[in-house]
Length: 369
Image (cartoon, rainbow, N blue to C red; front, side):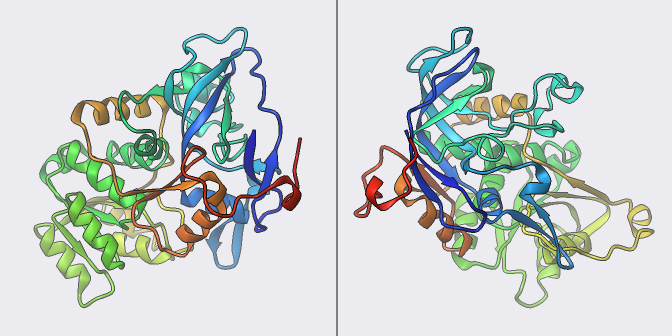
């Protein structure tokens, strides 16, 4: 089995070779067909989240241990089953629900594994998809993708699920009657645009500084894409929304974007933040009840939501966001490209893709067996 793993936070990814794991109990082993590259991977790779004001939330604080194989947006083919595994068959192609909890606490029993206090998330707390194989604790975490291509299905495990769950938190009347503002048109933002359209939004307005991403947002179905750094962008966004902004989904999550969202909202409006860029803002507490604002964080989503989402994608044939495939051996280059803001849409790693010219060899790397 070939993997790329973090052995030291902030250091280059390490190439590793070892025998593929043998599934035990109810475990399922999958051959990886596609693994999305996500901004969460960058935070995990570097080892922290920026809390603003010089403060950090480290991966050690979260319970992350090394070495760790990144990758939580995974589509794979079942190749082996543990002796008590049920609900999967050899050859089955599935999207993996990576936000796996302990399975025993009251949160998990409520179907909210993504909020479990002792999580086992793939690619964060357990080995993920930057590999040619991935081990999944139980077959119940496998979700049908139908005829969707693996590279198009993989991003739904995170960017799709995250935005789908955020959209479902919007007041249904607002979703039906009002135009929704989406901040950011990266992988999350573009996914958000496509899903808002599929879920019957009255229209989507995107705020994005990058011209190529603004164009991609229009292509994805946004009615307008506005550069928030040019002119009186707030007035332009309000005009595009019909005079009042009732709901903002912030796919960036910086101090600037959160403040922009709060400033845009009408009395009674909702801010749903999913982005994790980092920072902090000063918030006058009386303003929240005076303006009747709702400020809600939304963290990925439940397995039921992922199943609902994939059924929607299959039945409505929702077009994929722009996707660029890279060979697994280009994992670190892909992370760097994403971090430098050079990606429109999503990057996906594929162990079976055409091999790049420079492939690590055991002689040139720290091999693990």
